[in-house]
Image (cartoon, rainbow, N blue to C red):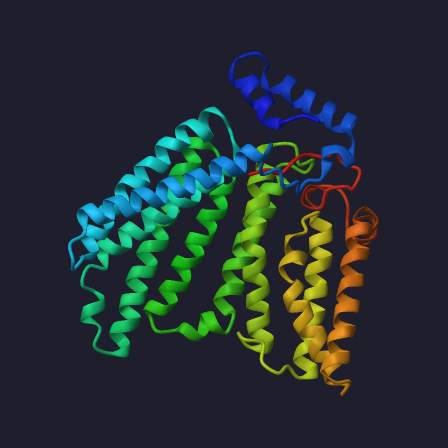
Length: 367
């Protein structure tokens, strides 16, 4: 076992140069083998129980600071401006703690908690400042759309800016996940600002934003086909941000936002589309699209089986068996399934960078 952060630290300290670090990392990856540490989507969020212990403490501390300064600053009739001021100490504390736990000690789970807290609290504070009195001025549906658009766009942009600042300072790949989601919220709020909520509920905007995010993730992966550098880590989190948006958008476009009682034809189109994304997920060697679509798979399969008139109980049983069997087969034979998919794709050039060979040296994807 080896920790890529140790190699990065050795390069930063001048013990190793970049070329030697890369060569050593590839050697260790081959030596350990895929079973040891090679899955490109390894979720190594914590080294030990102490990471969870610290994360709980961070949440409690920040919550206590919010409560304390809320009590000190907010009168009996609080205002949004004072509410924003009450959040500032917690925002500063989150950044200060990140300087130690993220920058110096590189503790992943506490860093994720601090990044989330810093970004969300910053976005909330900005929304409170701009939203001062905005809710009281809502007198019509148009005013409501205007308020939602203003607050959502500002909150999303501010949260995204905070996540970007966190990423630039601490180089935490998870910050890109927060940034991507914040920008997505900004886009959805912008649509609501113009009164076109149907584009969001109908799935169009969700599909567009998800595909753009997926394209950026694939671009980053193409720059690191062997999944050995931080580009792969960055892409990992963008895949996680893109996948649920794509699947929700696809479901909204075929079945409607809430799924409803699907007819056979829309459910068949949805299932065929999901299978296409599953093949893409295999080719990319990224499971995010498949994992994010499990509920939607269940909806589509339930609709198809249910339309055969088998009854609720039998439909549920068959859906669980079919979906569970598929997940077990793909999960257990991921490498074999990838080789089958790659065999029908063009190889060489850009295709080999986007769809890496199954035998490529494994890497790690982390927070």
